[in-house]
Length: 408
Image 1 (cartoon, rainbow, N blue to C red):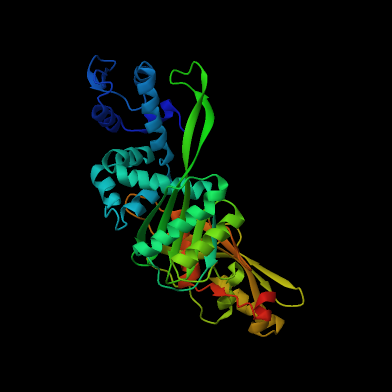
Image 2 (cartoon, rainbow, N blue to C red):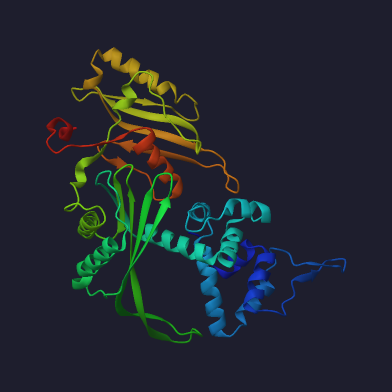
């Protein structure tokens, strides 16, 4: 999320898009979008000379200026690389069915601010949906539960019972009773079901300035509790964005009961990472076309008797693929069976394939046993997570009666 300031916003956004924005709102109709150069010729207003426009906005009536800047702040919220990528990804969902990357290319919309304001003006429902999504994942912690590969119940009876249990769960916390559930199939390929939960909160009073900024007043606010549930039947993973560890566990119980037909959630500690496949001769990383290249950077291996081997690629050396060969050589040199060796950490760099409208991206991430990773909640890391859990097979179920696995 970019930080908002009026001048920065005006300098970062194409004048043509600003002009369209103001025209649709019938604001600043008399503003001159041209200027006189040193030779006396009339030319289009320079993209960086925004002082006059900034002054014109500041002369607007307080209420109009406040409303206008609120819109600018919303647009700024999605004016960065990850938010632009998220806009494009959300636009591809069946809910919208928009090829936003192609639209940006055709209209020559290149800058982050330009893409954000374009979506705001031309696809406002998509913009609001993405804004809501980005707000929730940035403010609420996420937590994963391996709940099993089950059919997701999305009929009205199941959703009604789900909604009523959510209301009952929050009723003792001063929450309202108006609860809305927005469900859609987020990705047809992975069959990821997404449930947005909106529950009316109690009215609170917060301090703020009045419209003209001359006094401090109390403003009543009726906030929304926003939780997101992501469930993938193919992997059995349930991800919940919510606040509070115990609260998240209770929400997982409710989801599993009504949407999956279970008697609550399975033990959350049943999900662990397993890097033992790296020890298999001939192992290769199976990547889909979204990942162009994968470079191994570091492998830490426990050889038993508390002796650890650290294999690294230093600096800009392109020897990542050799790490697997060096790993197997180290295992052989210790004369230990592969089953007695444990790969405890993997650090790797992913190079994503270039997408139309988005510059090429890389991510360096690590996995550390038993269940630690530095993956974030952006869409690029979501691709990596799907490879870790699916394509590469680095996640497994830790059975509660398997003592050896629990010790691992």
